[in-house]
Length: 110
Image (tube, rainbow, N blue to C red; front, side, top):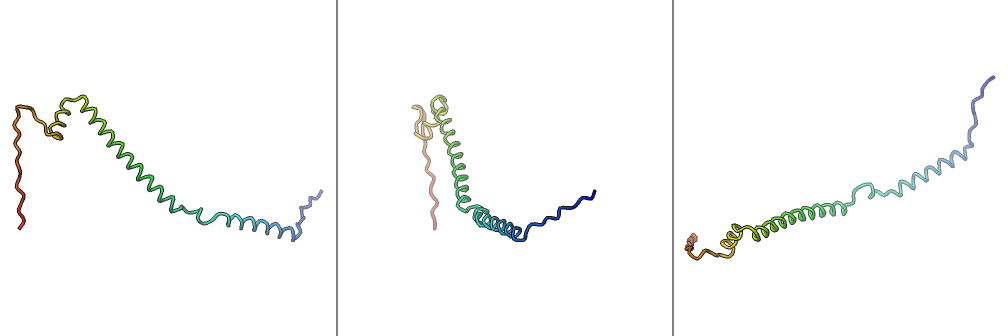
């Protein structure tokens, strides 16, 4: 028995209608995706930079707060820290100490 090949060919109008519909679908898809969506929005880039700056500032503030918390705890418990603070910031001395203040002369500009 001899096998015949399928020689059915769609009508030309149906082929061209299918091609036209596919072309319209592709055109709509291309038009629907604006060029702006394919590249990064400059506002988003700017906001990401601001977020990075704020995160860095927050880390710096957290480190400063931790240092202040350690200093407060030292002032509550450490006698040496209390004495250092009283001498440096408050100008206090023991009753039997003598304080000598030396003023350095300022250079005279000619």
